[in-house]
Image (cartoon, rainbow, N blue to C red; front, top):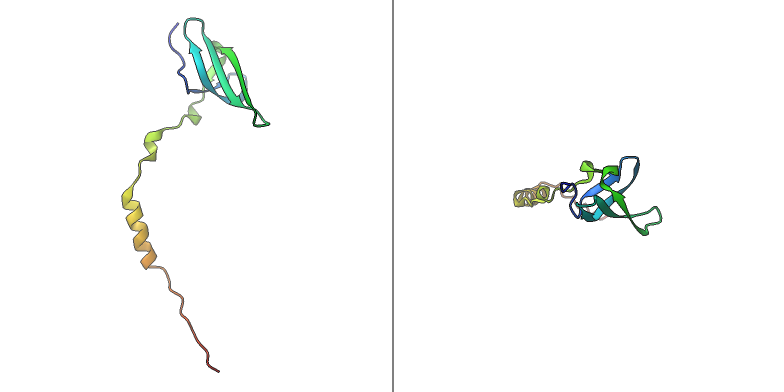
Length: 93
């Protein structure tokens, strides 16, 4: 059997249910151990056959999208100079 899953993949049952994380995968048997948090925020885990799981591509996180853009920070500093400054009016009556 080919390597369908890797540790850390996010999956769901074809029938629905919570988003789960692959904790262990045995390609020889097709057993996929998954962990998730239930509605009470308790950790749950179970083993499923690979055939009943699908990758949840919408939840895959791409760390390359987190690149820091230092140019944006410089632009923010310029914006501070353009802010309206309040006028202080003192009435000596």
